[in-house]
Amino acid sequence: MSDIDQSKMPLLEHLIELRNRLLWCFAALAVAFGICFYFAQPIYGWLVQPLKNVGQNKLIYTDIFEAFFVQVKVGLFAAMMLSFPVFATQIWRFVAPGLYRNEKKAFLPFLLMTPLLFALGAALAYYGAMPVALKFLLGFQGDVGGITQEALPGVGNYLSFSTKFIFGFGVAFQLPVLLMLLERAGIV
Image (cartoon, rainbow, N blue to C red; front, side):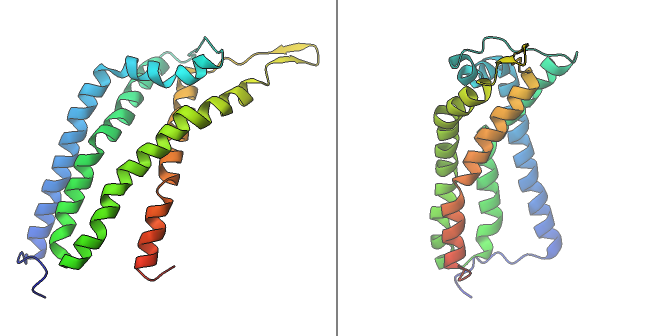
């Protein structure tokens, strides 16, 4: 019992600490969103490079607010990526006092590997898989029964495709961390 930090608190104090940790997370997200929203257009310009590299030089929007909401979504997506270290730190500071010293030492490598593996998965998605997928998917353009079939991706549609692709690969690269945690817990 002496391994656990000497910070015994009643339930109300735990809830107050949780609220403070969540406020730090939301504040970090708000600041990151403000910065990322300012740079949303260049960030989206970077996101559309795989589409441009496969020869698609036009994105359309058909809803009046679609282009604006794409900027907001880009800012929010980038802000969540940028503020993740603050989220992870706040979660760790909330949970760590309740862990034994050996549990802290066992969990810390996983906490450090999570963002690294996510970034590797996202990079593989962006630089490797997305160009191949886009080349395949845009290969359906052409004549179909005497009618021309042309791809005109919408700005919102492409943002949804690219963020799901990047996020999906990032999460998939978390599988080694999950399997190792399950193995240490004796489940696998």
